[in-house]
Length: 227
Image 1 (tube, rainbow, N blue to C red):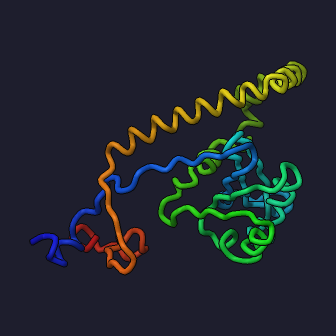
Image 2 (cartoon, rainbow, N blue to C red; image 1 turned 120 degrees about the horizontal axis):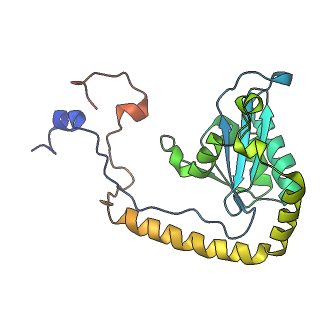
Image 3 (cartoon, rainbow, N blue to C red; image 1 turned 90 degrees about the horizontal axis):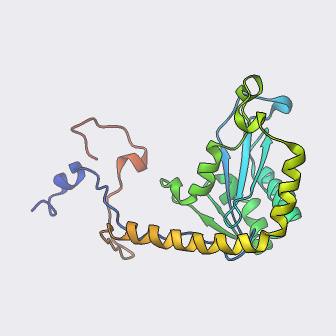
């Protein structure tokens, strides 16, 4: 009776159970798949820059970032060309949200001409591009660290750091292989744990579904309003 009652359905609590299996994102080789995002406005800096474009490679976790004054499609295209293509070669895939800077021309047409596949995260599910979302939280040295130095700014030793970097380059291939094996094992374990709690829901083209007011940005109806 409840399933057939329209009022019961629109006022019922929004289900929070997992409905689809977890799909881990993997990259076949370094600098093939990049996640890209734009952080919200910061206090205006020299050159009127107040936005930050951040890109992160899914294989090596390498981060590229640039401060810009505007966030147009041309700015994103220039960032990808200067910071990714000219440094690491053409990427195979770029993962982003559905912002106009990524989903509309000129960036969309530019990606198609270079055979770069665009992957878009769900509109209300930024976790689909969680790698970059997490990088945004701990990326730049903030002004407070200049006046009150933290460990990462005070303990750096440029001479020994360069020696360690050269040693890392000698062992790069072995470490890369071990990291890929550990990543695959960790994602397999995470998928098994996640999928054990999934309650499958399937839809067919043409099915009518309810859309939550939160996802639709509808007016809040209060405790007694429809969900």
